[in-house]
Length: 116
Length: 118
Image (cartoon, rainbow over all chains, first blue to last red; front, side, top):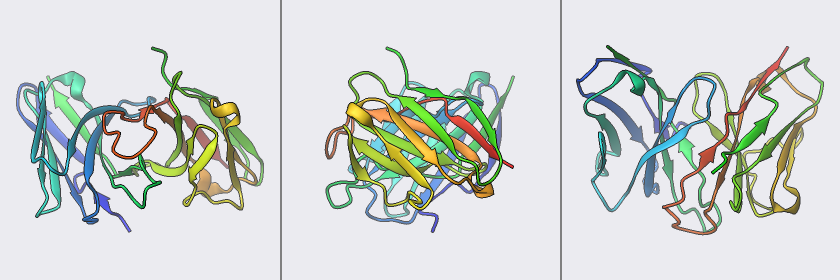
């Protein structure tokens, strides 16, 4: 049961343009969402997050939007840079009965390539 | 600050052999996680420790996988015997998080151990 889905395996964007990465989830209990970035041969690194009580969170070039009714979130990168080329994972978390804090459910990832 | 350290970086074994992975979390991080990432998929949680106690091991195949965290610091994950489907990257992560809603404490991942079972 894939509770977090990233339906686009890859995305190619020109430098300076906007990159939009999408993520859908099915579990309405999720109340916190995160994006991680992963370079080859490295572990994922935290990028940006959003609580379910918000619909937008911004950090520099990165903005995450949450649409709870559609169970959809997206990551916008503006402007895109070649150094942003990496795999981006969407992840979700819920407070499940008091003990499973910090348990992240990840999507499959989207490979972003930013061309100079 | 030093990051999460994992070793070895790569390991190749034959099926039915055993293997062990080691993780040293960021100093002061009480919570430690082991994730399994199969090629083309997102990481999946195997086990979560709070200090040296297990918080969640519901997705750990306990007939072949075991993990321990002695003295609440370093951790080892063992597979015995290994199967072909265990080929994956094993990621260790740590966090300051010690309870609910500690949303300002994201997980910090190590670079992982890539296991190939032949």
